[in-house]
View 1: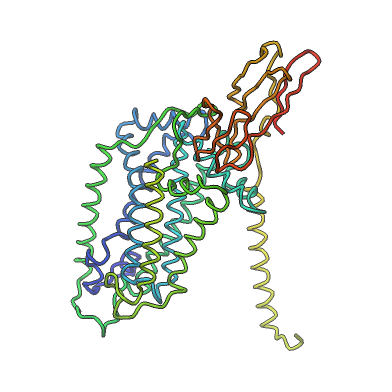
View 2 (view 1 turned 180 degrees about the vertical axis):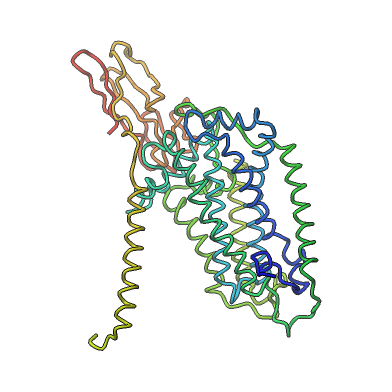
Length: 342
Length: 138
């Protein structure tokens, strides 16, 4: 049989520990499934979405209320996108908590983090494409944050928005970034990431001589487990998309008049909370960037986890990495709750 | 450098060519994306006849956005764009509040509570010869 990418990801047999749900949580595979659903539903939405400030919100309403199964397709796209961020975060936590980022997986850890950042940007640009009355302030503040960056700020703003006033002019740029500019990179990095998982020896487990469990499972058994996970996730997604409609609001007309507090999309609430404290460049750019850099450096500056510890939950030898990632997660969650509850 | 072999010279030339053309391509791409196709945002707003704004009136100009004041000392205008990150502040009983990050300004546009640091901008009002008001955003 000729080797294929599918067979690269599914070798004839793999150690059983690598495919245990309690070890992987199935998070990486679920993320791939969600991305595939996002690709398909996104292409379907493109048949009706009009990237023009006058018509965008109306075309979203057409998709949602008129196109047969359009609301369902849009809900699937929306919920897959939200779940993707959560599942990616869980995947990242799992990798750190099971000491799975050490050599030779350090580079793949960076690739995965890159995919995560791109997924956040895709979620934000997709949110802006609704072009309803709620998106203007998050768009204004988000793009004005670019302008606060010294020297290259105005340049970055023009690249992202195309100049002018964001709420009048950004739609076409954001559409192109969402559908092509960011997607092409997430595709490249995502495929590379999946390829490297196997290239680096599959899901991280101790070397053979340190393994207690030497059971192996076949390719068929692996695929069977993946199909089970796909089945469960799909049912959850379908139920969510039937019963929980994605947010939709009236079209944006001129400058929005907001009577209550304007809120960022949920994954940026923690940044919005910090921005209440002062300097936009510090709280809106430097600190989020520092958090990302610290996360990226975990495999490079902290001691390597012990071989025997790889793949077991919360081992002693990478305690510091666990503490750092727990601290980051807690800070983000607490800031988000502060924003939601005040 | 005199003992550079033919093979090394060609390799150097090839690598130099590749790096240079990549740099040029990326530079060109960035310049391509850097163009602003939009008309310049309006900096002048014709508000109409001055007599439309009686003494002691406050008029909300939501498309600027600004508020126009006519007092004993003449016409003045206050920008309603928050100086922190650009949302439009809302008028409250004691001044203005930003819906995005909670900055508060008093009735004259001075900062009462952060995160904004700068006061709301005063905008220039020009009265033309035929008594029309022109608002300038500079």
